[in-house]
Amino acid sequence: MAKAKKAKNVDDYRSLDAQGLESRIGDEQLRLKKLQFSHAVNPIENPLTIRQLRRTIARLKTEQRKRALGF
Image 1 (cartoon, rainbow, N blue to C red):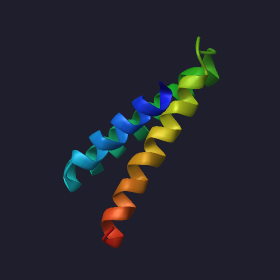
Image 2 (image 1 turned 60 degrees about the vertical axis):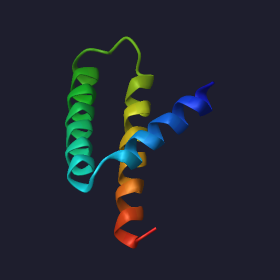
Image 3 (image 1 turned 90 degrees about the vertical axis):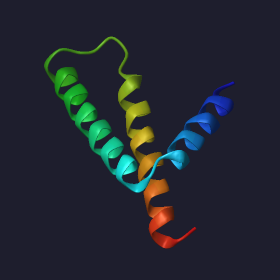
Image 4 (image 1 turned 60 degrees about the horizontal axis):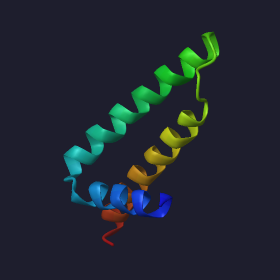
């Protein structure tokens, strides 16, 4: 079930245009910084959300790099 969800997200990333991808990366990075700060001040309920967010950013950046290389 997790693989189906991940594949769906990857398809969503591929459907974004270059500007949408750039803004999504910026939004997610800002969200990650806020989450990390709030976790440092007061531990959040589910710290695995930080890992999931980092992986989402990595998937977005991978898609951006693929486009830059022409794949």
